[in-house]
Amino acid sequence: MVPVGAYFAFAWDVLRELFRGGFATREFFDQAWFAVRVSLLPTAVITVPFGAVLSLHIGSLFAQLGAQSFTGSVAVLGIVQQAAPVVTVLVVAGAAGTAVAADLGARTIREEIDAMEVLGINTIRRLVVPRVVALAVVATLLNAVATTVGVGGGYAFNVLVQGGSPGAYIHSFTTLSQLADLWIGELKAFVFGLITGTVACYQGINAKSGPQGVGDGVNQSVVISFVLLFIVNAAMTLLYYQIVPPKGM
Image (cartoon, rainbow, N blue to C red; front, side, top):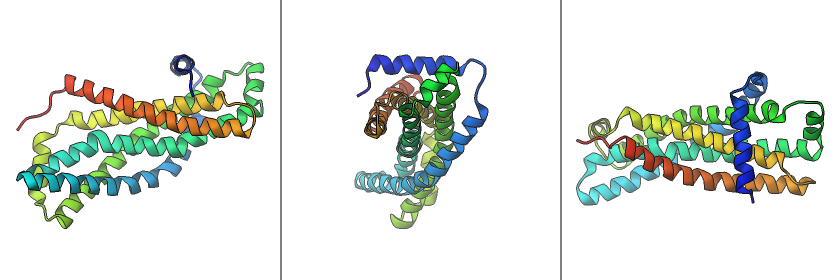
């Protein structure tokens, strides 16, 4: 597993190089396009049933409580604040993050990373920073897509399958939601993307010798990313409700 101190030292180096000159723009666009190609369709496909299942459970529970008119607010807020950013970055970590870890791991065991450092090339700035920024930006953009698809899927399922009222669904959402709910979802996706990128790059750069070491690094990058994402998600949610009070009726 990842030594905590070594990972945070690596993340600090990435953050420091991010604000220095010499950003590898072409590498950034290449990695961003690759991440979009492998993550866009799975994100949309997973978010639709996720939003439908969430609407099903919430609609059934609120029907028992006689509060069907609040189904839209709870379902949509759950998708915007929690489901969309988490699902988005889980897909990004599982698809693009593993590819990043495997690519850098292969370069490491072929000693390409060592050769670049001997030539005086800053590998953090040249290889790591563009990949981390690309995953963060793509996660943020895909979160907007996942939010739209999830909300649309939840609305269609509630209205067409459960027989809910379209007007009540939309009215309850607009009554209890606020713009900050959308921003926190986007911020979560961006932070999750940064975490996924740094974990994947760390595992790739520090891959052990041989294909087995690269495979172990890829597997560990997925597990560690998932664990960190859920921990950070809980912390950001708690902090958000401390700073931004929920909107009342």
